[in-house]
Amino acid sequence: MTNNFSTDKNLTKTANASTDGIVFNIQHYCIHDGPGIRTGVFLKGCPLRCLWCANPESQCTHPQVFWEARKCTHCGACTSICPQHALSLTQDAVQINLGACTGCGSCTKVCPTKARTMAGKRMTVDEVMKEVLEDSLFYGSDGGMTVSGGEPTMQPAFTLALLKAARAANITTAIETCGYGSWASFEALAPYCNTFLYDVKLVNPEKHLHYTKKENTRILSNLRGIAEHFPNCDIWIRTPIIPGANDSTDDILALRDLASSIPSCSQVHLLPYHNLGEGKRAQLGDPNAFFAVVPSAEHMEQLRDLLRSGNFEVR
Ligand code: SF4
Ligand code: SF4
Image (cartoon, rainbow, N blue to C red; front, side, top):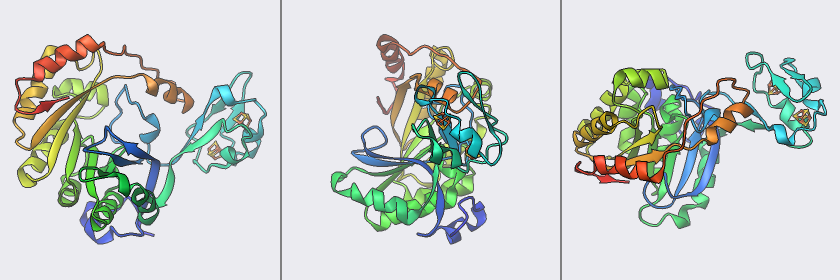
Protein backbone atom coordinates (compact mmCIF):
# COMPACT_ATOMS: atom_id res chain seq x y z
CA MET A 1 0.00 0.00 0.00
CA THR A 2 1.07 3.59 -0.58
CA ASN A 3 1.65 5.94 2.33
CA ASN A 4 -1.31 8.35 2.55
CA PHE A 5 0.82 11.25 3.76
CA SER A 6 2.97 11.39 0.61
CA THR A 7 4.74 14.66 -0.16
CA ASP A 8 3.28 17.00 -2.77
CA LYS A 9 6.24 16.38 -5.08
CA ASN A 10 5.37 12.76 -5.72
CA LEU A 11 1.63 13.21 -5.26
CA THR A 12 0.48 12.40 -8.76
CA LYS A 13 2.88 9.48 -9.02
CA THR A 14 1.74 7.82 -5.80
CA ALA A 15 -2.04 8.23 -6.04
CA ASN A 16 -3.64 4.99 -7.25
CA ALA A 17 -6.42 2.54 -6.39
CA SER A 18 -4.39 0.85 -3.66
CA THR A 19 -3.53 4.14 -1.94
CA ASP A 20 -4.92 4.09 1.57
CA GLY A 21 -5.94 6.73 4.08
CA ILE A 22 -7.64 7.25 7.42
CA VAL A 23 -11.40 7.70 7.03
CA PHE A 24 -13.60 8.66 9.97
CA ASN A 25 -16.97 8.39 8.27
CA ILE A 26 -18.73 7.69 4.99
CA GLN A 27 -22.14 9.34 4.89
CA HIS A 28 -24.78 8.35 2.37
CA TYR A 29 -27.51 10.46 0.75
CA CYS A 30 -26.03 13.81 1.85
CA ILE A 31 -27.94 16.84 0.58
CA HIS A 32 -25.86 19.66 2.11
CA ASP A 33 -22.37 18.72 0.90
CA GLY A 34 -22.45 19.94 -2.69
CA PRO A 35 -24.84 19.75 -5.64
CA GLY A 36 -27.57 17.07 -5.63
CA ILE A 37 -27.47 13.87 -3.60
CA ARG A 38 -23.95 12.90 -2.57
CA THR A 39 -21.81 10.43 -0.71
CA GLY A 40 -19.58 12.21 1.81
CA VAL A 41 -16.18 10.66 2.49
CA PHE A 42 -14.79 12.25 5.66
CA LEU A 43 -11.04 11.99 6.16
CA LYS A 44 -9.15 12.42 9.42
CA GLY A 45 -6.69 15.22 10.03
CA CYS A 46 -7.19 18.99 10.12
CA PRO A 47 -4.55 21.71 10.48
CA LEU A 48 -6.97 24.21 12.09
CA ARG A 49 -8.11 24.12 15.69
CA CYS A 50 -11.39 26.03 15.50
CA LEU A 51 -12.73 26.50 19.00
CA TRP A 52 -16.24 25.60 17.80
CA CYS A 53 -15.31 22.46 15.80
CA ALA A 54 -18.37 20.21 15.30
CA ASN A 55 -16.22 17.18 14.41
CA PRO A 56 -13.34 17.22 16.90
CA GLU A 57 -12.75 13.51 16.18
CA SER A 58 -11.61 14.60 12.70
CA GLN A 59 -8.79 16.87 13.90
CA CYS A 60 -5.95 14.46 14.55
CA THR A 61 -4.67 12.26 11.74
CA HIS A 62 -4.70 8.92 13.57
CA PRO A 63 -7.62 6.78 14.78
CA GLN A 64 -8.96 7.81 18.22
CA VAL A 65 -11.21 6.33 20.89
CA PHE A 66 -14.62 7.71 21.77
CA TRP A 67 -16.05 7.12 25.24
CA GLU A 68 -19.76 7.56 25.97
CA ALA A 69 -20.32 7.96 29.70
CA ARG A 70 -24.01 7.04 29.58
CA LYS A 71 -23.23 3.58 28.14
CA CYS A 72 -20.37 2.75 30.50
CA THR A 73 -21.06 0.25 33.31
CA HIS A 74 -17.60 0.74 34.88
CA CYS A 75 -16.79 -2.94 34.43
CA GLY A 76 -13.07 -2.21 34.04
CA ALA A 77 -12.51 -4.52 31.05
CA CYS A 78 -10.95 -1.73 28.99
CA THR A 79 -8.51 -0.63 31.68
CA SER A 80 -7.13 -4.15 32.11
CA ILE A 81 -6.59 -4.79 28.39
CA CYS A 82 -4.90 -1.50 27.45
CA PRO A 83 -1.27 -2.32 26.56
CA GLN A 84 -0.23 1.29 27.17
CA HIS A 85 -1.88 1.53 30.62
CA ALA A 86 -3.56 4.66 29.28
CA LEU A 87 -6.89 4.07 31.05
CA SER A 88 -7.87 4.33 34.70
CA LEU A 89 -11.21 3.75 36.34
CA THR A 90 -12.46 6.42 38.73
CA GLN A 91 -15.71 6.48 40.63
CA ASP A 92 -17.73 7.93 37.77
CA ALA A 93 -15.48 7.88 34.69
CA VAL A 94 -12.83 6.08 32.68
CA GLN A 95 -9.97 8.57 32.45
CA ILE A 96 -7.72 8.43 29.39
CA ASN A 97 -4.14 9.60 29.15
CA LEU A 98 -4.28 10.95 25.59
CA GLY A 99 -0.49 11.17 25.40
CA ALA A 100 -0.13 7.43 26.06
CA CYS A 101 -3.00 6.14 23.86
CA THR A 102 -1.77 4.77 20.51
CA GLY A 103 -5.27 4.25 19.06
CA CYS A 104 -4.76 0.47 18.83
CA GLY A 105 -8.48 -0.15 19.48
CA SER A 106 -8.03 -3.09 21.90
CA CYS A 107 -10.26 -1.42 24.50
CA THR A 108 -13.13 -1.05 22.03
CA LYS A 109 -13.10 -4.78 21.28
CA VAL A 110 -13.63 -5.82 24.90
CA CYS A 111 -16.18 -3.16 25.85
CA PRO A 112 -19.45 -5.07 26.38
CA THR A 113 -21.73 -2.05 26.02
CA LYS A 114 -20.05 -0.30 23.05
CA ALA A 115 -19.28 2.66 25.31
CA ARG A 116 -15.85 2.71 23.66
CA THR A 117 -15.73 3.02 19.87
CA MET A 118 -13.06 3.97 17.35
CA ALA A 119 -13.18 7.21 15.36
CA GLY A 120 -11.27 6.55 12.15
CA LYS A 121 -10.04 3.51 10.27
CA ARG A 122 -7.58 2.84 7.46
CA MET A 123 -9.26 2.18 4.09
CA THR A 124 -8.00 1.79 0.53
CA VAL A 125 -9.43 3.76 -2.40
CA ASP A 126 -11.01 0.53 -3.67
CA GLU A 127 -12.78 -0.02 -0.34
CA VAL A 128 -14.13 3.54 -0.27
CA MET A 129 -15.20 3.44 -3.91
CA LYS A 130 -17.12 0.21 -3.34
CA GLU A 131 -19.36 2.13 -0.90
CA VAL A 132 -19.54 5.20 -3.14
CA LEU A 133 -20.57 3.16 -6.18
CA GLU A 134 -23.41 1.55 -4.22
CA ASP A 135 -25.00 5.05 -4.04
CA SER A 136 -24.41 5.98 -7.67
CA LEU A 137 -28.00 5.20 -8.75
CA PHE A 138 -29.18 8.14 -6.62
CA TYR A 139 -26.77 10.78 -7.92
CA GLY A 140 -28.70 11.86 -11.02
CA SER A 141 -26.97 14.51 -13.14
CA ASP A 142 -25.81 16.75 -10.23
CA GLY A 143 -24.89 14.47 -7.34
CA GLY A 144 -21.69 12.55 -6.70
CA MET A 145 -18.89 12.16 -4.19
CA THR A 146 -17.66 14.84 -1.78
CA VAL A 147 -14.32 14.36 -0.04
CA SER A 148 -14.48 16.18 3.27
CA GLY A 149 -12.88 16.06 6.67
CA GLY A 150 -11.06 17.02 8.61
CA GLU A 151 -9.14 18.50 5.75
CA PRO A 152 -8.69 16.45 2.54
CA THR A 153 -5.36 18.11 1.70
CA MET A 154 -3.89 16.59 4.88
CA GLN A 155 -4.04 13.28 2.93
CA PRO A 156 -3.35 14.60 -0.59
CA ALA A 157 -2.39 11.35 -2.32
CA PHE A 158 -5.45 9.56 -0.94
CA THR A 159 -7.76 12.45 -1.88
CA LEU A 160 -6.31 12.61 -5.39
CA ALA A 161 -6.70 8.86 -5.87
CA LEU A 162 -10.34 9.07 -4.69
CA LEU A 163 -11.12 11.90 -7.11
CA LYS A 164 -9.48 10.08 -10.00
CA ALA A 165 -11.37 6.87 -9.21
CA ALA A 166 -14.67 8.76 -9.06
CA ARG A 167 -14.01 10.51 -12.35
CA ALA A 168 -13.09 7.17 -13.96
CA ALA A 169 -16.54 5.93 -12.85
CA ASN A 170 -18.23 9.06 -14.31
CA ILE A 171 -19.07 10.40 -10.86
CA THR A 172 -18.84 14.15 -10.29
CA THR A 173 -16.59 15.28 -7.47
CA ALA A 174 -16.44 17.93 -4.78
CA ILE A 175 -13.92 18.78 -2.07
CA GLU A 176 -14.87 20.43 1.19
CA THR A 177 -11.77 22.24 2.39
CA CYS A 178 -10.60 24.70 5.01
CA GLY A 179 -8.09 25.91 2.42
CA TYR A 180 -5.08 25.44 4.65
CA GLY A 181 -3.16 23.04 2.39
CA SER A 182 -0.13 23.54 0.17
CA TRP A 183 -0.74 25.15 -3.22
CA ALA A 184 0.87 22.07 -4.81
CA SER A 185 -1.92 19.93 -3.33
CA PHE A 186 -4.68 22.19 -4.65
CA GLU A 187 -2.98 22.37 -8.04
CA ALA A 188 -2.93 18.57 -8.22
CA LEU A 189 -6.53 18.11 -7.00
CA ALA A 190 -8.34 20.89 -8.88
CA PRO A 191 -8.29 19.24 -12.35
CA TYR A 192 -10.32 16.36 -10.88
CA CYS A 193 -12.72 18.47 -8.81
CA ASN A 194 -16.02 19.93 -10.06
CA THR A 195 -16.93 21.94 -6.97
CA PHE A 196 -14.93 23.35 -4.09
CA LEU A 197 -16.85 23.88 -0.86
CA TYR A 198 -14.37 26.38 0.49
CA ASP A 199 -14.58 27.32 4.16
CA VAL A 200 -13.69 30.88 5.08
CA LYS A 201 -14.07 31.19 8.82
CA LEU A 202 -12.97 34.82 9.01
CA VAL A 203 -11.47 37.35 6.61
CA ASN A 204 -9.97 39.39 9.48
CA PRO A 205 -6.44 37.92 9.91
CA GLU A 206 -6.06 38.58 13.66
CA LYS A 207 -9.44 37.12 14.53
CA HIS A 208 -8.79 34.13 12.27
CA LEU A 209 -5.56 33.38 14.11
CA HIS A 210 -7.24 33.78 17.49
CA TYR A 211 -10.20 31.49 16.79
CA THR A 212 -8.58 28.82 14.57
CA LYS A 213 -4.93 28.98 15.75
CA LYS A 214 -3.73 29.49 12.13
CA GLU A 215 -3.25 32.51 9.92
CA ASN A 216 -5.57 32.89 6.92
CA THR A 217 -2.98 34.17 4.39
CA ARG A 218 -2.50 30.76 2.80
CA ILE A 219 -6.25 30.04 2.83
CA LEU A 220 -7.07 33.24 0.93
CA SER A 221 -4.18 32.86 -1.54
CA ASN A 222 -5.20 29.25 -2.35
CA LEU A 223 -8.77 30.45 -2.92
CA ARG A 224 -7.57 33.11 -5.35
CA GLY A 225 -5.20 30.60 -6.98
CA ILE A 226 -8.00 28.12 -7.68
CA ALA A 227 -10.16 30.89 -9.16
CA GLU A 228 -7.33 32.14 -11.34
CA HIS A 229 -5.86 28.85 -12.58
CA PHE A 230 -8.96 26.62 -12.56
CA PRO A 231 -11.86 28.89 -13.56
CA ASN A 232 -14.03 25.89 -14.45
CA CYS A 233 -14.11 24.74 -10.83
CA ASP A 234 -17.27 26.05 -9.21
CA ILE A 235 -16.57 27.59 -5.78
CA TRP A 236 -19.03 27.73 -2.92
CA ILE A 237 -17.71 29.77 0.01
CA ARG A 238 -19.01 28.49 3.33
CA THR A 239 -18.86 30.27 6.68
CA PRO A 240 -20.03 28.83 9.99
CA ILE A 241 -21.71 31.64 11.93
CA ILE A 242 -20.41 31.66 15.49
CA PRO A 243 -22.09 34.39 17.57
CA GLY A 244 -19.51 36.69 19.12
CA ALA A 245 -16.67 35.34 16.94
CA ASN A 246 -17.43 36.11 13.29
CA ASP A 247 -20.94 37.53 13.01
CA SER A 248 -20.27 41.28 13.18
CA THR A 249 -21.37 43.54 10.32
CA ASP A 250 -17.69 44.12 9.47
CA ASP A 251 -17.04 40.35 9.31
CA ILE A 252 -19.96 39.73 6.96
CA LEU A 253 -19.19 42.71 4.71
CA ALA A 254 -15.56 41.55 4.42
CA LEU A 255 -16.88 38.13 3.43
CA ARG A 256 -19.13 39.76 0.82
CA ASP A 257 -16.19 41.71 -0.64
CA LEU A 258 -14.02 38.59 -0.75
CA ALA A 259 -16.70 36.49 -2.47
CA SER A 260 -17.39 39.30 -4.96
CA SER A 261 -13.70 39.30 -5.94
CA ILE A 262 -13.79 35.58 -6.86
CA PRO A 263 -15.41 35.29 -10.33
CA SER A 264 -16.07 31.54 -10.04
CA CYS A 265 -17.74 31.83 -6.62
CA SER A 266 -21.38 31.07 -7.44
CA GLN A 267 -22.71 30.63 -3.91
CA VAL A 268 -22.03 31.75 -0.34
CA HIS A 269 -23.46 29.65 2.48
CA LEU A 270 -23.90 30.85 6.05
CA LEU A 271 -24.04 27.87 8.38
CA PRO A 272 -25.53 28.54 11.84
CA TYR A 273 -23.40 27.25 14.74
CA HIS A 274 -24.70 24.13 16.44
CA ASN A 275 -23.34 22.81 19.70
CA LEU A 276 -23.08 19.07 18.87
CA GLY A 277 -19.29 19.28 18.97
CA GLU A 278 -19.31 20.19 22.66
CA GLY A 279 -20.51 16.70 23.63
CA LYS A 280 -18.05 15.04 21.25
CA ARG A 281 -15.13 16.96 22.73
CA ALA A 282 -16.10 15.63 26.13
CA GLN A 283 -16.30 12.06 24.75
CA LEU A 284 -12.76 12.40 23.41
CA GLY A 285 -11.49 13.48 26.81
CA ASP A 286 -10.80 17.06 25.68
CA PRO A 287 -10.89 19.25 28.79
CA ASN A 288 -11.18 22.53 26.81
CA ALA A 289 -14.86 23.35 26.79
CA PHE A 290 -16.17 25.94 24.34
CA PHE A 291 -19.66 27.32 24.46
CA ALA A 292 -21.42 29.61 22.02
CA VAL A 293 -25.10 30.33 21.63
CA VAL A 294 -26.90 29.01 18.59
CA PRO A 295 -27.77 32.03 16.38
CA SER A 296 -31.46 32.82 15.99
CA ALA A 297 -33.23 32.55 12.64
CA GLU A 298 -33.75 36.35 12.70
CA HIS A 299 -30.03 36.97 13.15
CA MET A 300 -29.18 34.61 10.26
CA GLU A 301 -31.68 36.51 8.09
CA GLN A 302 -30.00 39.83 8.98
CA LEU A 303 -26.58 38.47 8.04
CA ARG A 304 -27.94 37.03 4.81
CA ASP A 305 -29.37 40.45 3.91
CA LEU A 306 -25.89 41.99 4.33
CA LEU A 307 -24.56 39.58 1.69
CA ARG A 308 -27.36 40.03 -0.80
CA SER A 309 -25.69 42.86 -2.73
CA GLY A 310 -22.96 40.46 -3.94
CA ASN A 311 -22.98 38.80 -7.36
CA PHE A 312 -23.54 35.30 -6.00
CA GLU A 313 -26.36 33.24 -4.56
CA VAL A 314 -26.69 33.37 -0.76
CA ARG A 315 -27.92 30.41 1.21
S1 SF4 B 1 -6.96 2.51 21.93
FE1 SF4 B 1 -5.35 1.09 22.68
S2 SF4 B 1 -3.85 2.42 23.67
FE2 SF4 B 1 -5.71 3.65 23.45
S3 SF4 B 1 -6.82 3.40 25.37
FE3 SF4 B 1 -7.61 1.82 23.95
S4 SF4 B 1 -6.36 0.00 24.37
FE4 SF4 B 1 -5.28 1.76 25.27
S1 SF4 C 1 -15.09 -1.74 29.00
FE1 SF4 C 1 -16.69 -0.31 28.36
S2 SF4 C 1 -18.28 -0.48 29.94
FE2 SF4 C 1 -16.40 -1.41 30.76
S3 SF4 C 1 -15.39 0.28 31.91
FE3 SF4 C 1 -14.54 0.26 29.84
S4 SF4 C 1 -15.83 1.75 28.70
FE4 SF4 C 1 -16.93 1.20 30.56
